[in-house]
Each structure stands twice: as C-alpha cells, then as structure tokens.
Image (tube, rainbow, N blue to C red; front, side):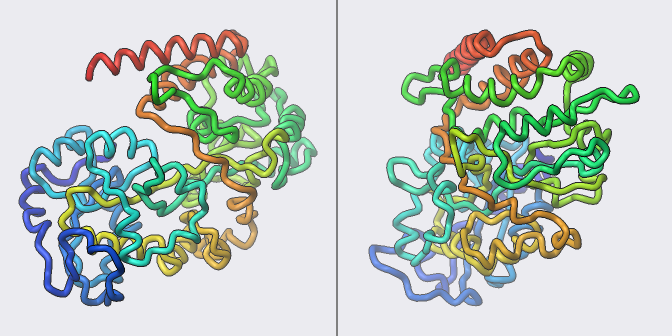
Amino acid sequence: MLSSVMSLSLLAACSSGGGTTSPTDSAASNPSPAGTVAPVNPDELTANLTWFGLASQKDFEDRYGQYIKKKFPKLSITYINQTDQQKMEQVIASGTPLDMYLSSAGELREDWLPANMAQELDPLMKTHNVDISPIEPAYLEQVTIDKKHYLLPLSDNKFVMYYNKDIFDRFGVKYPWDGMTWDEALDLSKQLTRNEGGKQYIGLWMSPKHYIRVTQNSSNMVDAATNKATVNNDNWKFIFEKIFYNFTRDPGLQQRANEKWLAHADFNKDFLVGMYVYTSGWMNSADTSLAMNWDIAAVPQFKEYPGLNTQPYATYAGITSTSKNKDAAMEVLKYLISEEYQTIMSKRGVVTPLTTKSVRDAAFTDYPFAKSKNIKALFYGKPAPGRVMTEYDELVIEKAFDEDVVREIAKGKMDVNSALRKAEETSNKLIQEQLTKK
C-alpha cells in the first residue's frame, strides 16, 4: 500500500463536482443509447473524472495523468491512491464519486465485483467504436466473466529470465537463449551451482510467489464454486517437481537456504545467482537494479507446453458502475489502449499488451541499453491462458506456498507430495477463517 496524500474529507470536497459535465461532452452522464456516438474532438471533451488505485500520486501522474491531460486538455482529473487507512470501501462510504480505477485481474474479483462497482464495458465499447482486436487475447481472458469485459489492459509487468554474463563467463557456460526448455535451463544451472572461494554460487532462482502467480500450465488454486483449495493435484505436482524440487537438489544450495533464505539481492547485489526469473520492472531502473553485466532471455518453456510463456501480470483500467461520466471515461480508456499512447509507453519501457509490431518494436528505445540487450525476449512465445482467479488465491500463494512449503523443499526438508498435502490443508484452514469473518 502506498502512502496517502490527502484525507477522505478533502477528497470528498475535491471531488464534489465529479458528476458535473459540460454541454461539449455528448451525454457524459450515462452510457449512450444503442448505436455509436459521433467522433469525439479530444480538445472539446469536458468532464471531471475521479480515479482510484494503488499507484502513488506521483506514479499515476507520470504514467497516465500527464498524457490524459495533454490529449484531453479540458478534462479535470482527480486521483485517489489507496492506502491501509483509505480503502475503496471507505472512499465510497465517504460519498466521493469514483469514475475510473486501476486494477489487477485479481483485484477485480476480490474488490470491485463484490462491491458491485465494476461496469461491464461491452456496451460502451460498441458505442464508442473501441477496437480491442490488437490486444493479445490472454490479457482479456482474465477479466472476461460470463463473456463480459470488465477491464482493459494498459501494460504488462512481463516475466523474463535475467542472467549475469560475468558468472557464465567465469565458469565457461553457454548463455541462456530464447526458446530453451526448463530441462535445458536445469542443465545450465547445474554447471553454475558450486562453492568457490567460500562463495556459494546458485545457477537459477526466482521470486517464488511471483512465478506461482503466472505458471505456464495455468494451474488454479481455489475452486470458485466450493471455496476449497485445489493444489494437491498433478498440475501443481508438475510445477513443484520441475521448478522448486529439481533446481534445489544441490547440497550447497540447500545449506545456504537453511542459513539465509534466497532473495533478489543474491542476484542483483551480491552476484551469487547466475539466472533469475522476475518481472521486466528491473529494466526500468537498470542503473541501480542491475548493477552487473546483464542480459535477458525469455522464460524457459516446458516441453509439455511448447510455445507458452508465463501468464499475463498486467495492470488494467476500468469504469465504475456508479460513474456519471461513463462516456468521457470510455474515451479516456480508448486512448489508453491506442497505438498512440501505447507507443509512448513502449519507448519508456512499459511492456505493451498490444500485438501491434510497431508498438512492440518501440520497446525500451528511450533507454541507451536497448540496442545491446535482447529486448525481443519480452515478446517471445505466447502468454499462457490466465488461470481461474478467486479472492482467496493470495492466501494460497503467500502463506501456504511461498512462506512455507516452497522453503521446506528448497531446504531439503520436504518432498513434493508432502508439501502439496500440507499446502492444501493450510490453504483450506486460511480460507475458512476468511469465510467466517464475512
């Protein structure tokens, strides 16, 4: 959660005009009737739009606000960032009108749909001639419920495999490549994992909870109909054996995991890990986040799932069901998925959800390192289909998996079958505790 920049009372005061529109905004109060609206002149679109999301005020303005204001100079934008003290339900209860929101696919199900605040977008998209065909379908699958779209993707925090060239050079090992399998990555990892001069080198590691969210076999965690965990099965056994068990059999690695749990710093500060699977976000701050001779390759594929990369890990935007400015909000959303805006963001190192070649080719071109790095790895393969999400997935990921059984396996203290049995038991207990609070 990010720090608050204003109190709820101030927010309510600042947003008191949220429903006010100008005659220049064609029917900005409610969705237009069936049919399409006349082309909108961005210079004349007038409305007061209030956004809500997890991003800080600074990040919202940097990523979205400044570009929306430039495109629509007569729009008034107010942004409210969520904090522990300022949650969605509190803002709604204060009477502050909300028009648009930033969300993940998980937050849509956890927060916005249960609160009846998520607007179905299909009628608005039809009215405003919004073309979603350039969007990679996997991004839409995660936010389509009963064939209704509730969010549109703005960006993806794409997973890649970073690697430290100096470690590979030191031990004379071939660099990773796009299209390699996890079995081939395991072979490279074994060649790098060794103790030399008192330093325990580790061939490959990752942020387990991040990878678990985007597994390439799209494993579900909870049955939405029964609210029971579904992790003690062959799908999760496949992931745990191929990743968390196979890559942690070295005694030196297990000893290190017992002494001090593995972390980002082992790769990008202490330079002990040769390959690290994580999001593309490190590339945006490469000067400080990647202080080594680095490059990237696509996340390895399973031979059982050829051509599939990880699931989307996207940021989305939606329109609230209570907005009095839905037409204006749809015009803004239409701009944010446009080739114009997406190209600007792509140059800045924001991974696009569009399949448009020119937008993808622009990736990271504002960065000096772009010409010398394997940027095309960002778009290698197809995103895996999104799993069926529930509001209890994070309990499984954080508590049952990441903080418990993944560590026990890596420390050499637990086999996969025992780990999954324990994870399912723990998950069901945690879910039941949450259900009793409702």
